[in-house]
Image 1 (cartoon, rainbow, N blue to C red):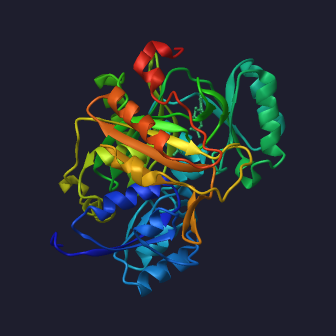
Image 2 (cartoon, rainbow, N blue to C red):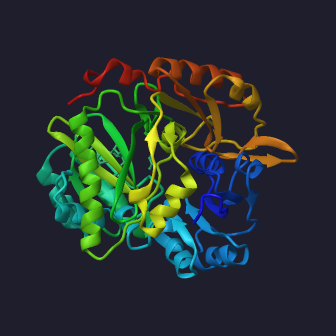
Length: 434
Ligand code: AMP
Ligand code: GLY
């Protein structure tokens, strides 16, 4: 296909990750008409919404793509991937960015992922899996201390209980088997607790070639000092300054081994494979895999990436990723998440958002929409995570300063943020317990 040939694109998802993907796709000389579903208040200004299209319905997505002459479907979130939307789109003869339903089990089943990791011989926490409560409780008592209890299936980021005590772990096991996470908790994985800083390493792959993307670090806890409940992510930066070249190579090697193992098992993994790692004193160990780009990691990784994203995504689908051209800007990105007061608990919606245009006038600043909507011509809050305020600059400190300056210019009732995104990383690795 010549570079001049344009491709109409349908992007599935509604978060800051999708807004960042859309902006990068739009930069490509090959980007034709852009469609999105369900989208958000920022996405709808830059793409046409596929009104009423259910992103989790494989047949409906494939049908929409066929009737609208879409040449590439890009799947942002995990639910459509696990539901097999990628399979239906490919069966209709249309290119798709995102793994098949089988391959997405790397995220859809923690036990599946553990078994692949075992076969591939990659370092991860020791574990056992259970389909009955009694034996799971016995194992927790046997561990007699901190451990992590995980519902096997997708639980919207809530199915992981990081337990400091046996009692907390037992409560977690009971929650899973009581159906707290639905069918996702019918199988439970109990694993050893790992210590160290976390690091995300996303990689693009066509099932053979693996291209690692820049490292990044999310801030999952709601409150400053990494306290409070887990959230979908309160802020992120890239790259991670204290990762050694050896650690980076070890993480890349894990990604390569997993893709090769899946291929040996008869599964072609194409799309983005997200490795979540703990940088332990014995080297990086896998915490989890996701079958997609991270949110909010994408909001700091893509702005620094020099590549034609349409070309790269097509190559992931058609098995020619070895010919892709991907390089990195030599700078830093920091993104701060502005949330609604009360998040991750209950919060109000519909508050008018102002100041985005002013914020984006600052050098290096981009504001990605997450939970926003347009109502009667006004931009309003429509979710817990409202905006991702990203700044790219020549230094880590500079990017932090610029992101926080931009956050000051944006306003909505209940605006809440962490002021310490990246602060711990600036103190270095010694800021983490090892
Ligand atoms: P997961 O969805 O498996 O990544 O788990 C969500 C979060 O729980 C991770 O980002 C870690 O902060 C934490 N976590 C998961 N597994 C472990 C582990 N084995 N040791 C310590 N923390 C963990
Ligand atoms: N940032 C964590 C995730 O995307 O799952």
